[in-house]
Length: 254
Image 1: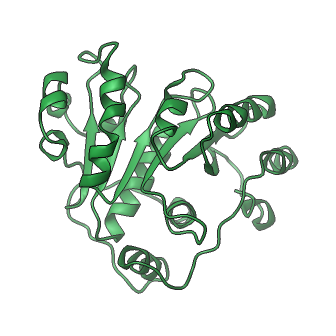
Image 2 (image 1 turned 90 degrees about the vertical axis):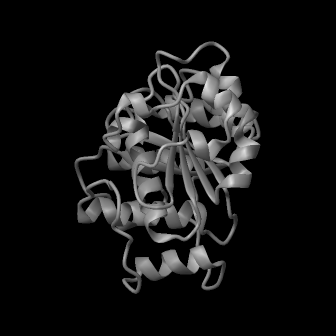
């Protein structure tokens, strides 16, 4: 399995980003946290992470949002196929980011066929907005507050979503850019629906989630080709649900 993932990472040209020593206040705050100099904000509901998961999430946040090559504001998270654990990865990344930066973070549940982000934060279904509110009200009036003081959740209930809901959601990305410092979008799988690629077209890039022992090499390459055809930057890839430690030389290929 390790050899397969190594070859897969090489074939997909997944790159590890270097973290610059200087940057904006959010970057400095997060780098300070990662080195143990800054304590996390603890108010609100947060996700329970073990030490290994915490370190992996720190690595992912630094690679995606604070690399020397790019400073993305809107990032789509999407699995190659169903069952990769994309929603959990997206939720824990947003939670970690919001807890250690000053800017507002918005977590968007764009899997309208099966929205599930609210379950990760124990949010009641009744708190999720309906289509009429989503169309007419400002974003921060319709988004929930699942975590600390600067984490927001925007989600439509599956019962309320209709065939036009996705386009409504996509059309509000420019407003999200104006209202929030960081927007993380949990999208359906790349190989199952066109939603991830369409959202990637209005985002700054995409993080692809692969399921350990589940995602086949040809499926991952097909997903990468879909992104390439749409001109969507692949900001990184995450091997999720693995049950063994990855050696450092392979980890650097993530």
